[in-house]
Image (cartoon, rainbow, N blue to C red):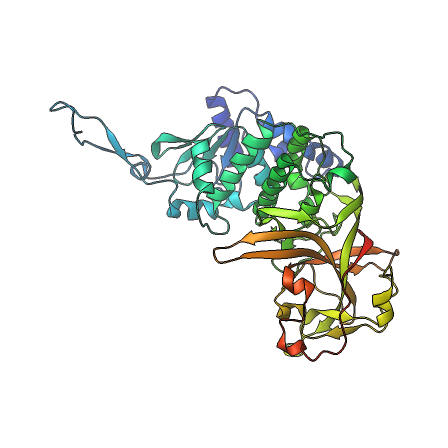
Length: 481
């Protein structure tokens, strides 16, 4: 005990008070300077947390010196009993009424949001996989299991299903709201981990399942997207852990749907898993193929899943993947409509932008486009795509000017608004690798309003006098690595 940090010592005390014999501490049970042991144990985290009786969380602690227990004002935590007489009760008889600060209030949520534990990415899968969590916060103790949520300040606990419903019913929330994360975690647990629903068509090849749409698969893809969004908001000391730190969750989910997660993307309804983007250009992680969100180190969102219904427009022909739980490589071959573009420079600020490109007439008449060779004679058509009303979200910094790029159509979605419905074409922005014919890397994502995709220059006054025509999109086969 004398060799342990304060947080570990306090955890031992709690474990003994609960009359539990064994305690797992990651940093002690995994040999930290042994990559082989770390790799072996990291893939077991799903079983460690799922099968634990209880997980102890030092929510407020910045490091191991802080411990679980803190000095606090008990009057600020203890509910206040009010001696109020009820109507209909005989004279002189009272029933206790308790007043307390609502732990679901804005003030509480903002404090928990910035707590050290909730900023750590590795902890996210621990929250998801743990059946029961006992949290020590800076002013109280909280509890969550698969049926209830309990706060020390409020002697009346809240049913978990009620909490989930209330949070999903909220019309608005702010980025990083821990209550939304908790609700998504609890819902994913009950729907896919603690009470898994077996998926149909379990024997389908991945190349078939990736193009199919099933109700339970759509539910999984949407829930997974929300989890990845919350996960990538958090901090990782080593970006190379981006896949490993969420591997336990995907392992737990794969047991119910009978498919393994591929580089952080589910092979079922795989085309929907490609519709992610970043908030700004990021660095490559080097641990996943470029079509995976794990290939970049920034925060991820999934605009392609915002519509109530998304229709597949590309056909996935082949999926290949290899690697370990922390590092993956692979390719996706698909047949999709593509439109040429080119990297240029915006004169006003000198920044790089994507322009749609004009190609020679022979290019437009060709039965099959050769995406590797047909680059001579291409020219930018102004204005840039951003000014056409289609901002491009780039995964990484754009390549040098005059580099040819391609918009590949993946899906169609309709967003229902109060005044009108808006239809979108979701495209991936691709750049040739220069290594193999027909091989590309993903460098961005763009949501085109359908009218803009069909006639991209029609809404731009700057492009009315453009003499050179834009080629119509054509269906080609591409491989993304």
